[in-house]
Image (cartoon, rainbow, N blue to C red; front, side):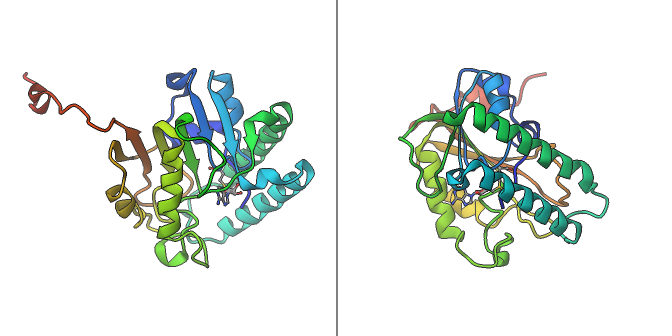
Length: 245
Ligand SMILES: C[S@@+](CC[C@H](N)C(=O)[O-])C[C@H]1O[C@@H](n2cnc3c(N)ncnc32)[C@H](O)[C@@H]1O
């Protein structure tokens, strides 16, 4: 689905304060028709958004996106994956707003958008301080594994390759949202534990709650993976003790 969130929504689900990353390089993959890139650029980040559909002509891209927004919102209206008290109308409006900002920014800054697809990105090793990946991993896992896909092209093996690729191009930190199942009640996605268990040396993972609400119910964390170095210093013994009153 070529369906994107606003930059403000992305900051909420990535627990991201862009001011903390001013001057840093950012990869948003998949960028989709979202408006994180213009917001991040205004906050002083050097940003690249990558998505396979950026290979389409602008007119086709816009048509595809409007169709996908309409289709997705209709699916969500009928879906058991959204709480009955969740108001879809503001959610819908935000997607249209994201699309308008994306179309304008892509025209003004074509260098910030590049076609490419996981698990093989056309990018050099260690090229970004911060890598963000929203609504692809875990979401498009097979239905049987708590994702949306009826076929199993985005299975655990694919996720291992995609994660390795995102880490290959990342220097400091990778954040992935959502890290939970789409089937309700949401729970930490079953691929998260095996992926964390196999992280290369030097990377440390944590699951964090976020304030973003897209109608799910249950456990809805974001996965954060930080580079801590190949031989992190052991904490000083005083840091292991509870603070003295
Ligand atoms: C639901 S959108 C998410 C967009 C945005 N990151 C967000 O959070 O709203 C999923 C995006 O994944 C892209 N996509 C599909 N297959 C992909 C792949 N193999 N590698 C990278 N992106 C892919 C689609 O083109 C689509 O734009």
